[in-house]
Length: 201
Length: 201
Image (cartoon, rainbow over all chains, first blue to last red; front, side, top):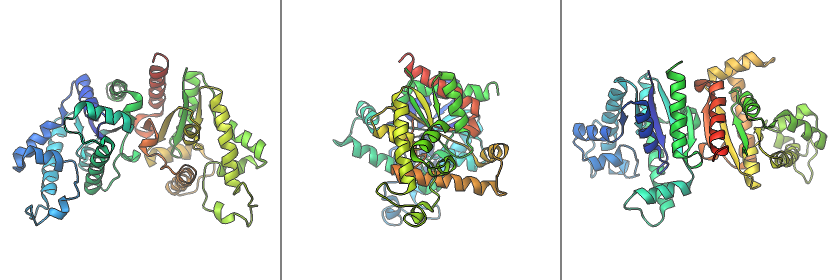
């Protein structure tokens, strides 16, 4: 049986699309927006709010605590979302092999004793800028600063909840530069190694 | 034509053997001890001295400057070795495709405008300890501390001469966990992607 595959990724590196293609090729579920939808249903927060606070630290989250946002036993809204999200991610993984993108899934599952194949996708700024300009509707003029801000938010979020360094090699089995290797090659490479390790181990 | 492949690696991760096998499979030269021998010939230092000071910062290098070791225009003995080593690495790369292990080759060649495929091999402490105990003759009792000391020396050396962070994903196209993936799978994976990218691009 194939493993649970977690994919961390720099913003605009194509990690989401690579994960989706890997899931399709292996015939296993792909969890991304499905997780956010469940979090929305269970937490009562709007999906747009969860899209941000389920993966990014904006720098305002702690500051807001107890002022604009209600602070309670469950911590900030971000903490509540993290807690619900963690449970949903574990439920998904317990159903069997799948691909989960972002949201500290590697840490959450490893802490819960679930073995995973952890992958991190990154790319040079030029490739990422090109992808973002191609895909996003509202990109501010300075794309590089936009990328930096997005990555900073993910890095801080990951650091806060896992106490690990985002993208640091010791937390991943594979770090791939999708800009250099190409998106399709990354998919092939992941599918090949998964089949090799898990189909005929 | 195949590229120049540089391989950085944690101590005991099998990066040396993986590099050697990749070179054999691709039919290109493998540079490791050959570089050290040339450095020895051109610098006058003993090969044992170069083995250490061409890749590790021991913490004593700066302290010794001008006291035990002669300090001159060319800096410390470590600086002299780095300078000669850099030139030899560039000469190797200019001859064509090859595999070069360690010694900041990624940084040296990129700064010289030579395109490379940069790989970093790492593994969990258990796999590395097992490999080291199997291979090395004089391993102190505490293998984990021995590994930590070796990696610390390489990390500091890399940091000092490149101002980059050793193993950090943005400097590599592939980071592979040889403990999880297996040494042979790492070789296959590298050979496959090199053939894909460079044989029929």
